[in-house]
Image (tube, rainbow over all chains, first blue to last red; front, side, top):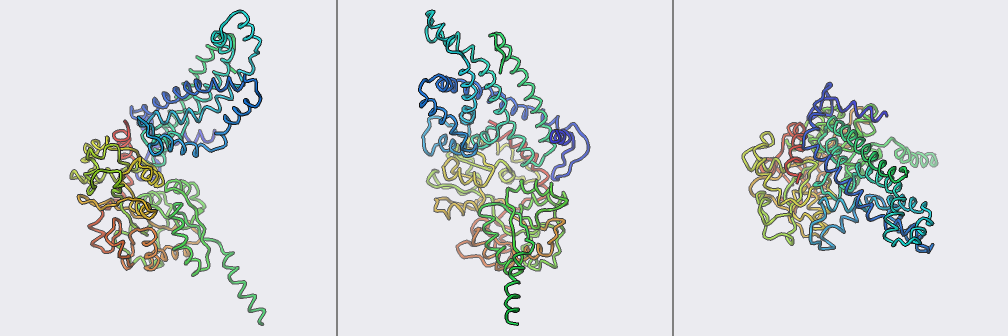
Length: 254
Length: 338
């Protein structure tokens, strides 16, 4: 709360170019950061966060299903170890590794990935997958296999069993995982900073730019406040939409 | 009596080691290693005062200095000349007592940045490139706009003042009338491969070939050459490189101000400057310092008042500090944005 208070206070003080001192009260910082140039960064962040959430979900679900339902304990352990492995390397190390992979020095990619939104997206999805897998696997493992066996015994094909039984029953995990991934991607910093090469910026990168590169700490505070409000709004809307979806299937989000 | 003399002899070095250290704030990596080896060691040998370092980026250290203003944790700070202006504006530097820095009399006029901070070495932001990755030679700033360099150019985005000023100079402006270069700068966009925020990233981009042509710090280019990389660093034929001067200052409220002055005086001495030049491949600020033949005439290495004047462009610190936010905002909107 103290930090938030300091942030709000800073955001309404006048920026004095060429000085670290601040002037009197003003709303100029908010008018400046509500310009299209800055709103575009917020929009880019929303789009990248949404795409990251969707792609992470799609990539993680099969792994989570295998983790929860593979009969062999040895295979489950292997999947678990592989899932947790990225946690044991820091975000910076992982991102630097992606820089080598996405650049043209080791692999000649037909399209440019490094310093492009696509490259940032790949890094964000990889960063988010372990968490999504663990949340989904927990949700899937809580589904009693009796339901799936009952559907199959009544003649449903495996794909129909999955679509009509497993998937709806795992919706609480999908909602929780999606909200977690969306929220933390919204505040991502090292991945867009390094894989974006200055060309792909998300909210946290712009806050840093304003504060540490332009010395415009009041502007940085105002942008952080605007971003915070937008984040809370987007999360509230997403949470409500996903919660309604889960409730319609007779479940509440975890 | 003999044993008493022995005890005293042993006690003196111990007392020296136990003395309060002088804390020096400087960039990490090669910067800290060099200042430690070339300045701190002889300083400790002469005064008996040990030196400790606080390392970090230019702005991290500024932020730390701000929050510890009431009880400074640092005695001497090395920073860039225009960021030094921000320290001064916030009352973080102490006015220097030049009588305690007699070597300041031998400094190039350009190194006397203010009453609060003095230039310790110089370099230029110029063009460095990998000849194996580029068709033809690069000899001037305007080459950066040529179609043959499409998708090959890297430049700093944390501080775009160098390329903004160069673009303005090419179109008859300068850092004050920087708008004159805006249209030209917009035309360079197709050639830009990446932007970088740190020296380390700049060097990575050069090594991997992601940005084999860069607006680069001459010291970093020489560092890569020293590592055996095929990198050319040039003195552009059309407009000079943008001079950077790193400075040293005494922190306001330092309890070791006298030692801090002595440290700076030592860093500016002819002998230490000669070692700094050799190690950094930078320009000395003490005009009496001898420069190795191999370095004479290299970008950023100035040895006379005439060279300081003709071979580099020095931006006005105050204009730079005051306009940086506007430059950055314009640069992000018009050059960085896709």
